[in-house]
Length: 121
Image (cartoon, rainbow, N blue to C red; front, side):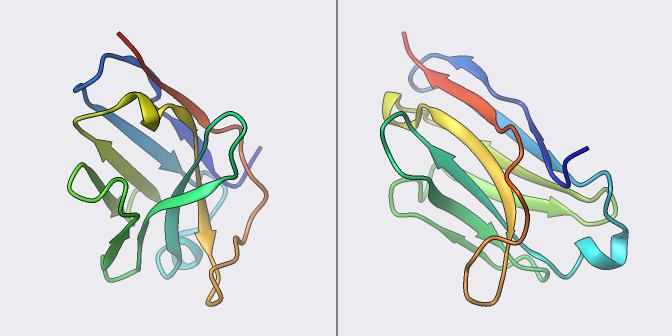
């Protein structure tokens, strides 16, 4: 089983909303809670990009393309990270992944299967 498991994707119309969930079923609390966690996405033909991150003390950062529309949050007791996406646009269509970031912004774990988000009318 992967370290990180993503869910919550789907097909949504432009302007719609989705909430993605990332869970860490194999991690213990003391490993998960200090991690800087990030949501990434990869659209067809494009490189994977970091769209949002959250530190252990809930400090957040967003890519300019999603700022004001996406909100990242975490529940350390549940070992989960969420990405709430609003005002979705066709250009948000991608496979979304979560991962933990190192101090040099590299990813810590192997990629999971991701969850597909498709924004289309």
